[in-house]
Image (spheres, rainbow, N blue to C red):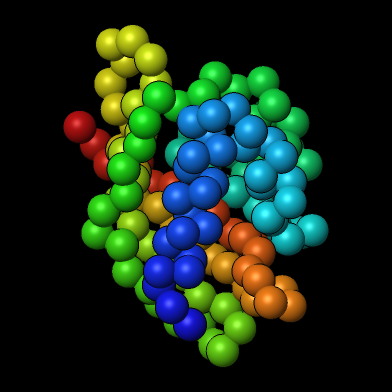
Length: 121
């Protein structure tokens, strides 16, 4: 299990949120029963994620720092990091501590749980 492999997946997810294809990316990369626990207090199923990202404004840019890998067993791991993302205009950055739990599916990985904890300004 390599942090670089899971970090690459996380970057691909964020890039899809920047180019407006997040609905397609997460529709393909989440497990059937996967969920996202979002900063606003919502828990979204995979279908909720697909539906909401289809209409969401894209992020302009993002960065990932303080990343670390927490192996759970030989076929699952959590990637924990500080994420910061910016939309267009003067809106302040969205900064949160984020966790993505991935499970091995064949030769690849699938996102089972994603969670955000906002970092106060």
